[in-house]
Length: 272
Length: 162
Image 1 (cartoon, rainbow over the protein chains, first blue to last red):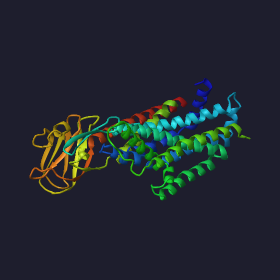
Image 2: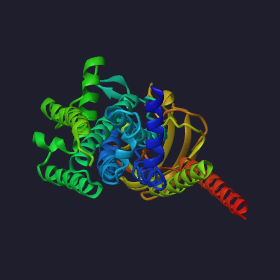
Image 3: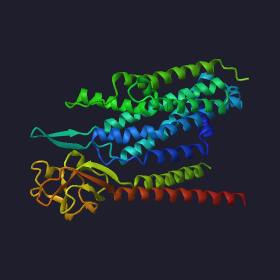
């Protein structure tokens, strides 16, 4: 990492994560994530009692945090002409964009990731448990996939934060206003949650939700892992390949598209 | 100024953890005993004080509850041959049992009727008080450290200005 980029990232973190932004995001995340408990440690229980409620309770935390952090980082920076001042120094627009986006994305992932890590440790997900049962008079032993499910939850966390960050960055640069971009973003995210919630879970568009989407990715990939790398079988429930791809493409491709669009906007935008 | 910020962040984490611990300290339905759902553990820090409440059991009287190590239970599935870590007899529906497991491992909760037969199905609530206590201590310690840093920094700032 070059010296200039590192300086820009440090400046962005000091400016954008000042009191009380970090404190509020940390507090809300801890209160939302850590109360999720499951005494049962089989794979299905971890998927239903840990993974699914986590995304449901975290939607508004993702939405509010990303809206505030990226809205301040880009929308407010344009509105209050901080970007104009920053660009008067010998730094390129791409470098400023990369520093702002990376700093906020990584800080966001650190906060959410560390709380998810503590939650996993408290649920002993780093350690697979063994389950025994009798089948046709024979004892069968199964090793729980808790660590795999935990890793997949981190993957889904990255996808959700990446998508929402890219979308919010695009909106902030497109409308050049903090308040308006936050409003549009929140209306979009919560509108989609409401609309997808009414669609049920048997249609692909339901998986465009930030609640159902990540949990379906965790469930499908866990089942895929079991069916590919072990001798056991795990069903995917209502999540078909189409539904899984819908969720994955929406978060990953959607995030990439909005990121590239934001980069183009940053390149061509008139700050005056 | 940086130390003050660290103090505020630690304080916020401590208070949030306190709230989360309070929310977390709830009973959780464990499902059916006798199936694999009755298995619990292993735990990070032993011994753990565990409370089990017999919410719904049939028959509802003269029950015996045993906590048996996985290795002791699996070969025979016979409670008389297994070396139980904890046994209590004469239990009824809605009774609460508090016990400690001294050794780290995987355990079955086995409930038998008066005649010694395994109970088909039961609804239990289980809570691990030890873990909740750990979280409580951690949140209290973090809160105390946070308050100390904030107060010390505040006093130093006031003295500096004076």
